[in-house]
View 1 (cartoon, rainbow, N blue to C red):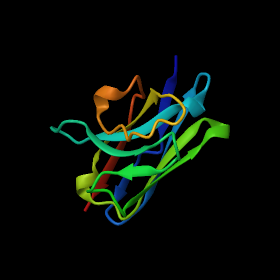
View 2 (tube, helix red, strand yellow):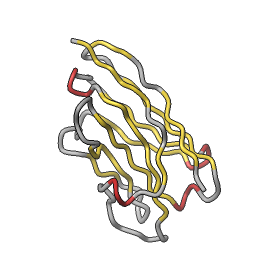
View 3 (spheres, rainbow, N blue to C red):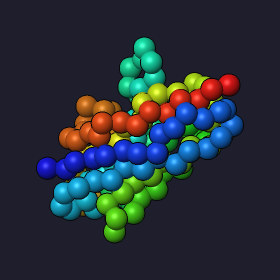
Length: 128
């Protein structure tokens, strides 16, 4: 069982940056791929970024590529999502999610249905 807790969401003005954190509790954190998703008001949850267990590479959603950075610290059981140059359209609840995969798994899991565990989310609000 893995428990995920997100933090770092704030109300900011457009153009600012934020770094979101996700802390995981439970064993074998390094065996999980971690994804970030977000859900804007009135919209479905969408993929933002995910890492890959085989090599640690990261895949970003097209809308976020170049504006955010995914990072991971296995020693602290944490993943991060830093978002630059925030825009009002980035207003959403941001979730981290975990999926247990085998060593060498080379898939990017961008479908929320793939994930085993979810955090409660952290709210990001961007005003113009």
